[in-house]
Picture 1 (tube, each protein chain N blue to C red):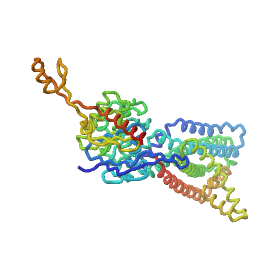
Picture 2: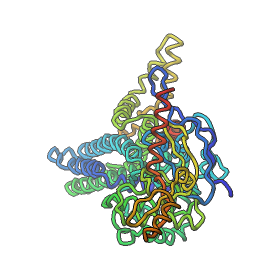
Picture 3: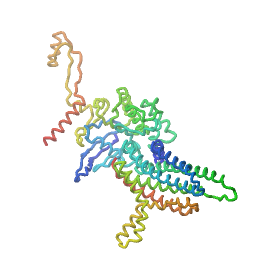
Picture 4: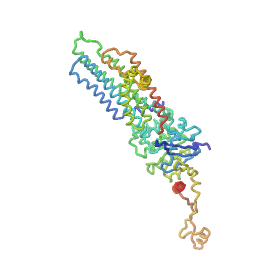
Length: 287
Length: 270
């Protein structure tokens, strides 16, 4: 499988302008995101997620290391024609209507004049904003802003879609709609890089995740394998307590009861996330 | 193409701003208001007064607009983070800066065109009313050269472009709108007094001071070069060579200052 994003040992220092002090936002991060995956980038506030995204989008330069997007350097402006980006809490030109806004970005991304109208109406209907497309963006609710943001990110049919908190401020119905759009993108072979704090959502749709803390990568892998690590067998027994499977079955039989459900129990992503962050902090305190 | 899209969007944003409406209305109001000085009834002098008054309104409010609108349009993008969305697309930073500059040039062109039309209309109206009271035999020809009023407006537009490019250069590295506006106004004043450095250069005895003044006199534009209003107001023919010289001088500064703004913005972390 070809690689959509390759991050090699990047470090980013911000100068604090106080006696040469520097803040290390990203510390030796290496990651690879294969094409066609939904990849979750997780971490608490200040963990370096946004800085990593900004480097990926060429908005800032890493102090060290290299980032490649579809084998092009991220500093190369042309590489961005294959990227669609929805920023966190998006702000757009409030004086434009939804349709004008998406058309503007379509033109900026190089969609040909004769295809702009078609592409714009396709993405607006994909995010379910047909009825509000002729209204000024300044009158949109937060959820509608997220959806028009998603539309502008998709209008040029990019291969890599970067979504920073796409569910923030979206009602449950809107969230379901956005989830469906993300899954549809995966079906079409697109790569999705998702940054969110909604861990249940990540668990539901992501193929792989990476957890960052204080700029460092502390965990990476497929959601399934990471969550399976501590899976336990759980039996739901109707009417009687469980002690051991065999004994229980025999005992159940002797008692005339039956084993009705066998379910794989697992910790959820939220527990894993909190545990890893806690361990990292403890380790540093001891060190 | 992208440059023009950004410029068009900048123009759309600017003409929706209340500040722009306010300055345009105030300037037109002042030009039209100059009609009320007709009580003095100085004949030709009255028309010259209207020309002077109109040019003053154009230059003063135009300079104000060039600084404030440029800084505001730039910092609106930075503060609302729309610049992040825009630069995450295949857009060069040079296209962003030059698109903004081009957009502001269109805004200033629109402003100067409105001012020139208002001034020409006021002058034509007043001239006609004075003519009607003078018999044909003693009526002089060509009190006001309307073509020169248009040429003067074009040269002032070039000057406003230089002010805008200067403001964009400051905004490209500055962190606040207020700082950019204050610094730009200060520089506009210095550029109006720049001829003093030239005078100092010619009279300085020390070679170090001479060298420093020579460097300063070329670093900042000399706004006196655009000061052609006296030719028009005194009824003399405005020489085309002066118009061309001032325009070329301004355009060289457009290019130089926007190049520096692009360079400075390309180093900026967003």
